[in-house]
Image (cartoon, rainbow, N blue to C red):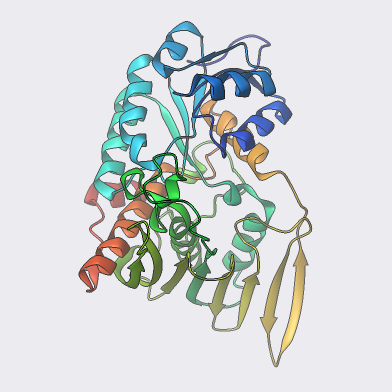
Length: 375
């Protein structure tokens, strides 16, 4: 469904929980977007969201919402365990553009299934990783690709944040992050950020193409999205004794380029959002990569203790993400977060989870046809 005439991109939001407010504010600020409708199984939540973000209507059934409104796209702001089924239902209902909150799925094969459904429908799907749309990432990509730190040796990415565990494990309304049935725990909530960055930067370091600038249509699908392919994952971690979710992961990812990814995510440690790229001639450090400071900088360490700072302008990431989603849906820009990368990330996350549970190194079985399309 491609918009025509002077109206904006008609958008519906599915899921009116906490993260949806960021998409709502982004929709109000984005010139090309009209927030038309919203849906949540909790009617009071849907009604309140519609009032706050000036929607035409609210629903408890998203398929009814899609049937009634001429939507150009939807934002899927639901739990990871629901995404596979909901994406298929959205496509069957006629939606052809979907921005889906992370994590796209729980496993690599599920991500492949989603990709095939999207391709068969002639649709467009982008996973929502807001930090990828910040100029901070575009500048980091530029510095790595320009050889500023020489050959990339490793990428270290951390997302840790302490969980107070104040909710009862018997509370059915507890936060989804504390519920294994809803894909709660570190892997699909915070480890996914570290994996996303490690895979992406390792690929750029091996000569791959950066995508944060958006680029011309088709650019993100050109050679280089998998210039460094993850081959093996090793990970240690543990489960929460209260909730049963995996709440700690400390892993290593081997790439066929020779680069090593190091990922850290813990719900038992103080906040860390660091992204660190080590090369033969220097290092690049971002201290707050996922939710950057208002005036972020990239620290370039080189020589004998010398440091240069690269300042980056602050932006509203969710607005940038929504604008890129709309432009990509209209064929005006390449997606900053290509679906090929999402699939690779899901196989990597699944391997890290398996490694924790089975206490062994795990091969990452990327599909041959996926590698061929991204080669």
